[in-house]
Image 1: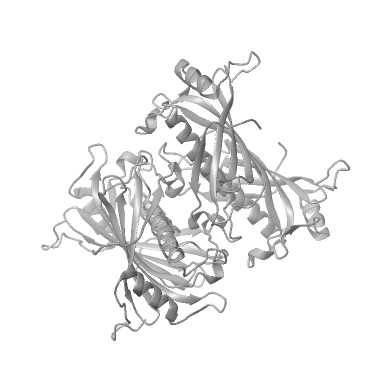
Image 2: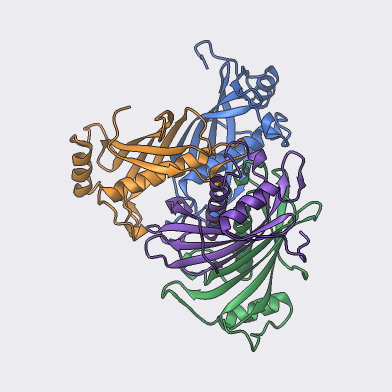
Length: 148
Length: 148
Length: 148
Length: 148
């Protein structure tokens, strides 16, 4: 997994824990979602007001759990974009202990550009493509074989 | 994806919804978890009392989102075991509308047999292997190439 | 606490539990909310589609916890309306074990009639007043001293 | 409501929001819980490791909702102890916008000193009484009429 230019810190809440005393698996998606939204917010792609303008819908997620997350840990979630197709964006995530930097989980997601007002998928807006490519320091062009 | 011998119904809660008005992605893991635990409970592998005896820990999940889940839908989650390694069990899931049977999402998970009292992974207990194989109607033997 | 004409069953989810192994306190509000929404849905006051039409906003809640709720329990939540002011409706709740009928918690809430499209409180619609009064079997008139 | 010597900041998560686009009511209990646990942790009354040692169980909560909480807000939760009985501790909470200091909600809770290893209520340990009284700057003695 390559380097991350964006990290978002997450405070583990008591309410995130399950009977095993560590963070419940569903919360990993919550942490990844929070980091993803802060990523597009920091890049200026969503202003944070209207949820009709959030511009993406989740199509696919994958998580590999490496170590349980404890209440006392502070987590930071690295997010980066690794691929942009015509309509889809693939991001990767790394959940780390913010102090020790021990890797706790890694994940990936595919989101699809989405017009919530008209309930339909759309091509990735050119501005998204430019801003993300610039931020990630590489031209993430649509691969010729990528149909979505 | 093959057939399911076990389904668990889930009532969508208002509290599962997010600002887009449909079920938040993290809840898909909650629904899969609930179905998985009811599956091992129905098979007599966990009696439902001590969480120290639950016997498995989650290592990996994957979800493909096919259609948004609405508040008024009743969801049912199909669960079946597709593979047992030395220590790991691979399950597949299908989230369906319980009335129309429309497929809403599909998922998979890898769990590892785990002794919570000693905090270590263990080989799948022989009883688990027998009960699950019998229930699924096929001998799910450890594949020779499966190291986990 | 008086009698209930409406009960809604709740399946306890593994995801509702906290490190003490029983249902986390925040979920009691989720259970009460789910029962409250099903109550207004059953009474025909909300059709279940647009959340802009849900018609009420929560102003105040109170819960008394009587016994921990375990994973294996099935809970049912009794809901009834005990008072209607000009703009506010006071409901009471009882969380019970659906099998033993042991009382697990009791609660109350005040909701205010609310027009989500215009973001303002409104007087309780006459239809709500009639339907609820009829269902509860008593004329729940606005008390003369009730200012909200 | 009197002054607070302890505040805990909460990041609003996308996963805390409901279809109305603001923080779901159940999360107010999550926020209060998180602040309460950080309060007893900061006072040295719980070291943050074993949940068997957390020493209190929730008996009663009350929340008054004053303003919706939006995604972009940072919340801070003020916590203070207003009364200690023989076995019970009454705390009050204030949820504020951390920037504008606008009051968003206020709440209270009653917790009971609890020995989780033996599943029974206990008198408030003398050390808790001393530490909390000292922190709050007043001798919070058991009122003579307080039976719990």
